[in-house]
Length: 501
Image 1 (cartoon, rainbow, N blue to C red):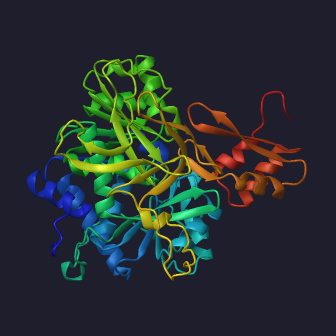
Image 2: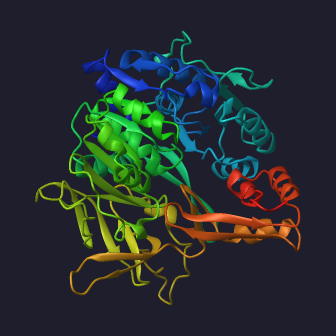
């Protein structure tokens, strides 16, 4: 029950839908889940999902995890992810999302940074033994007391989880729901390293509403999400939008175009949420015209400086909404114009929906004195990005902290139109698809491989950057990076090219 707190938590949003339509389909697995995880795909109604959430929440409570402790989650885009997040909230826990690409080195840093008490992983994802990764990371971190996972053939010491378990929850041990409490921790790459960014339920719902209202999605919509659920934006644009719509969430493990198109048709999805460059490419190729039931496309741009110069949206039958992502700092959304061009972005408050004068302010875009784009508003975790405290002046008054987050993206105001143009990404940060990391890591890993090794990031239109490596022995370089616990993007930069040994 809420106490003097009018805003619901995400678990309470789920409960409201459950009360209205317990038998409506809630969650649908990717049809190729067996290939991805070795587990058969499932489909759950809200009532079935509620029983699974309660069983998982009971497991976390019985394991002795204290209220407000952090649980680290590294799962694919399957129903286990959604159920685990809801169960954690029901048990009063905070979820730390770990990107699927992360291996032992990054997992250990993130878990140490948050003091996570538990890890939840999938036994196997795309042929990678994630259970073993979780166990090895837990062995290096003092705070972890509980490691559990979904799947079969889990290693000794890892507690198996089962969404079909008949496990009752002791409601007297549930924490009081409070939307102002921290709910999510994600990780931001900056020039100085990784930053843990916490958000409350209020922050997450505000972000979801900014996208949901701008894209004009209908209530009870059927959403197909093709995004990896490892970031604030990934969770907001799928999980939170699903709860706001009260509809059905179908999940796609990125990425197989044929599987995705079959899912849209089979599940009668009217909304697709996907990386924007991918959605544009599919629309230009005419692939989306084969699924006439699709009406809304929400495209996420992890390289927002590319939106203004992107191709026109060519599909008049489907509305395209661009979502500008600024790492873990925040986002804003803008529907494309009737001619398919990106909407002009103005400085100042942006509203949801923008054409209604009395609508709520979703956030504000500012141009900072540094010539960069800043964000403020109910979704932006300003405290997480605050600079270290500066010494007081001669009168004992510390200098004021800005009331916005500087995203680091270079920006300017067009004098003719008054619109904001985003011109360059933050210095010192590389982006490869949805994976961001400090530029200094490239030099560090190359140094570990010896004087003849080189690792560099090349500009890439679709993903921001792509990695390329060169060593006297590429196979040995790959092996060494794997032993260091690095993710596949680093390792595969040293793949053998045609014509090389």
